[in-house]
Image (tube, rainbow, N blue to C red; front, side, top):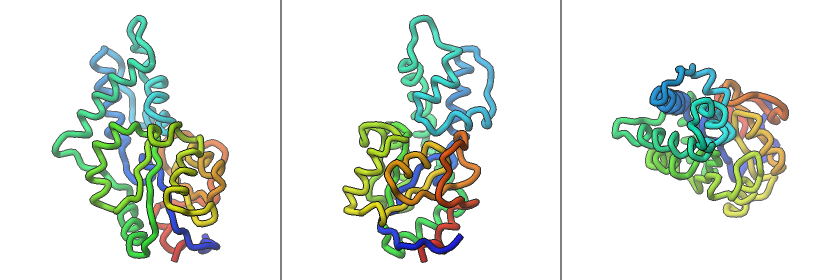
Length: 222
């Protein structure tokens, strides 16, 4: 890939599958829920395919077969969220950064390029991870659907982050790993970089540029 035609002032990242490998944590919580109700175990690959559209959609895809009478998707989500928060909040729980992520964040910090996170992960779950996220990088914002007012692929959150950081479309890059992310970036009109092998189903649209590892972004912005 050639160097970007502009020097970004703001880089906005998706979280799961882009910066951190959380599929093991999510799959563990899904299977703990399913086991508690006598359900079958799901593989990480099955869970991976349901990630990217938010936790409620994940519950709809993977847990509704175990719903009790009159139990809504929201009820399932609340039960699943409690399990996930409990596991993510364990004292020995550590974020698993994807290869090259910390290297890229260090480079952005050295270059004084602002960074923000735009995730479909609910705020209460994300807040459990915040101490480890902020230890690695001085994020300007960590934005969840509750902050944006609507989940991705609606570009509202991305527009808000650009406004908060006083950055134009042509000064912003969005980095993600799924069609939800690519749709978000394109709807906002920003350059979109995609990480191969992430979470969710890869369907159109595609990003402006693909990366095999996120640190491949470093020479693009130098």
